[in-house]
Length: 321
Image 1 (cartoon, rainbow, N blue to C red):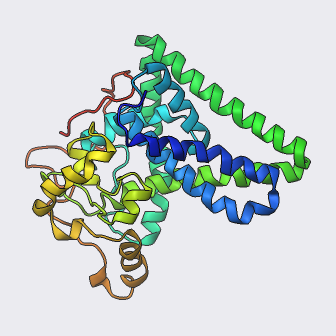
Image 2 (image 1 turned 120 degrees about the vertical axis):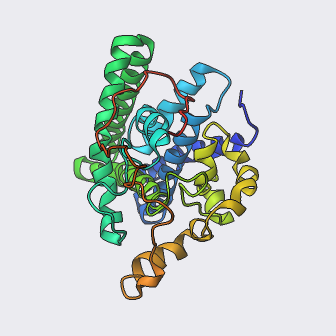
């Protein structure tokens, strides 16, 4: 049923998500130990949803739809939103004007405050392409529109049932706490972290460049736990390529990338950027190549979202402009 054998690991992670979350229902005393693991698995759900919407996991269309709904329960939001905000918008503009998730909308600086607030800013601006996508699906692609409504219904209905179950087991206040720590907190962590990752993978990069448009984290550990999503540059250049094939593809372009855009350790890079750099600025990032807000001569800078999305299904990847 799987298109790639490597997704056996994807399925193992997907099965671990409810086991860890519901174990906290059974034994609330385990919450301090299991909630951090649930946060990681929720982040994994977001990463897997990203991979799934670029390169569907199963051969069966129905199973792919079910996969999207399953991941929505742990990621924190219906996963169809990846298509308009990421596949069809971010991958097209790659941090240039028109991208709903540009890193430089309100500030061209890079510091912890800007990075921390970016997910909230990004969430606000992603509403526009999401609404346009839903409107076009309603007008032009009724099966997709029904799929979107079903994802919302399954996501909202299942969490209402999970909250009710927790309250039945542990009382109103205790049940709300258990549900929040098993599902809500991990989902919020996932949503924030996914967008934070997007920020650091593009801040001070050169979207006009062939290979320096993204920052790639090359460490084996982060790429194992995040299904090779640290290798961001090659993903933008071959967005439909399965996540398991990214290391080989990255090796082919690595020598052409600016050394500043291929750090090994994610945590060491964050430490330098947000702890050391405020006191020793040379450890912070600097703009590589041409800035995204410096278009070629004669091209006007327009931050408005271009309503040219097509109402399409998962696995569609637009080319960079």
